[in-house]
Length: 224
Image (cartoon, rainbow, N blue to C red; front, side, top):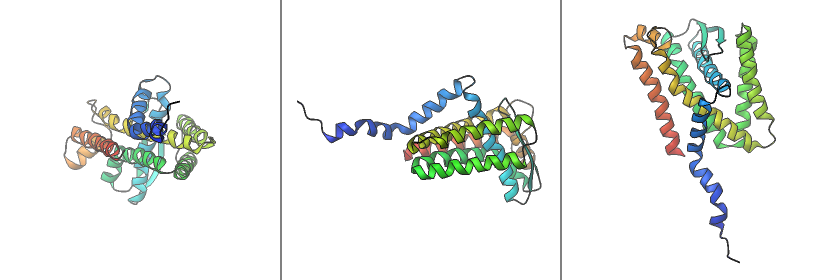
């Protein structure tokens, strides 16, 4: 009988480890194309976008009035006070940070994945309690809560890691595409707000946000 060496036995795991980033990226691209299934993942990126506006407002001395999430993947975070530039810039940039943080943290350790999932669940509960005012936003937050609660309930922590890595990759990928929706000729949204503050055209901010996302993907690919 031919012998099987240890390298041959480890090859499936080695393949997964070597190409894990690309497999998650491919899965995220495919998820974006699937009707209905892609909707909760679009909401996920929108939530992190809007909560990033809110966190920026809180950090710069302002407050969150309300957060609204819409069925089509749009959203709105109404704030008062704070640094207007910081708040406007932080939506798309924050979604990139959240996606990257979720992906890297979940990849690093099973317990960290568990803690991170719990933290996001608490953040969603706080959003529901303090800033969600309309039924649609409440419904979307509950869907996102269910997404993370079901992930946390899995008995296998390795499965939780993989799910959170997928969530992080989807959020990151969507945060690269999302800024281009600003180029609709209506001159509203974060890009228009920053254009008014800085005199740099809206498309420049779109390029900055998307470039940050692409640079982050490149960093993760090199790190993998």
